[in-house]
Length: 203
Image (cartoon, rainbow, N blue to C red; front, top):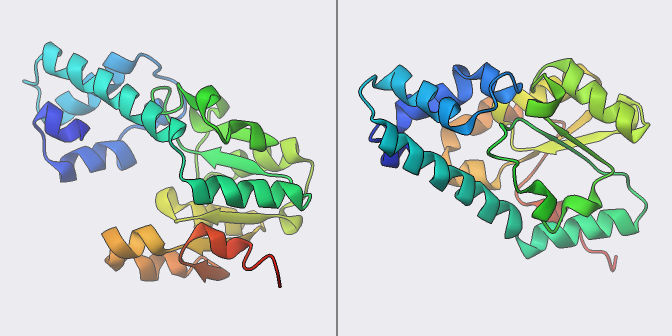
């Protein structure tokens, strides 16, 4: 983990990632080293440059690996939705490091619209990022379904613009079960895993 490589606590690092780094998310800051340095030194001003460089290189490689090794079940669900004529949009709060390898992902070609916050200049749960995706897809909010785990208050934002909201609870239930109740309040439906979106295609 980046926090471990930097020698800072997970709690303090998560606070920087999720609460104190809007410039990173909306693309105002695009230098990878400076992004990590800024967050690390907000926690501990003495973190040395070399440790930051190693952590930055590792973070870029870790996200590249994640994008290149998408789970088979995710690929299958997206391919099934496309085969049924659904238009697919991706809305992601991400900095330049996190999406650097997106073009190499085996699911990239399946999306009709891809909106990354660092390119869009806005971030979930702000209405502008949802409206940008809807515009690129050529659909209204009431025709659309937003699916997510609820991080970054994304479910709340999607519901506010009029989308039907489905929460995926599986990973959250395993890692942060205390967050389920609050996020579920903003969902119209709750599923555990992505394949539940398509159910049994033989039925």
